[in-house]
Image (cartoon, rainbow, N blue to C red; front, side, top):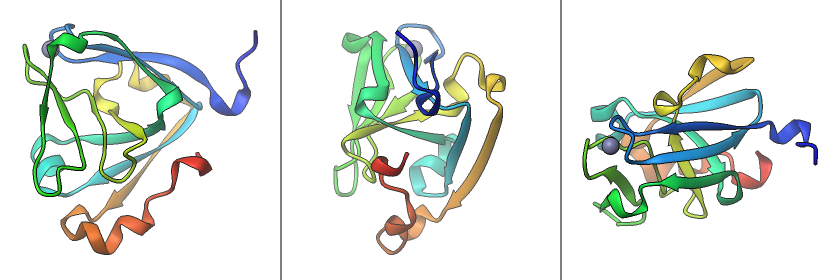
Length: 136
Ligand SMILES: [Zn+2]
């Protein structure tokens, strides 16, 4: 079985203590979203957004605690042991996942990483600027 070029390779990541671990499939050239909303700004979260089929939780389903606020659409998933949010279900892409680029084991392994700023403080006004999953 060969991996389709565009879909790239599976990579690993997780929380700080290792209780929560995941695999994520990404191309070699990725685009991150740097959001300034009240949540992302506080934690320095860098979004790598993928479809559900490109993400698999490999450890720690029973260690994850969920936090919601505002509309409750986003499911902020924290490791109950170390408190790190290594991935979550974003309001912008409820059918996929946002992985924290900073929680990947090998963030230096990509051919190219570009970052787009997203004004999450004006979420309703700007949400349309985020690319739909189908185009990824
Ligand atoms: Zn942890």
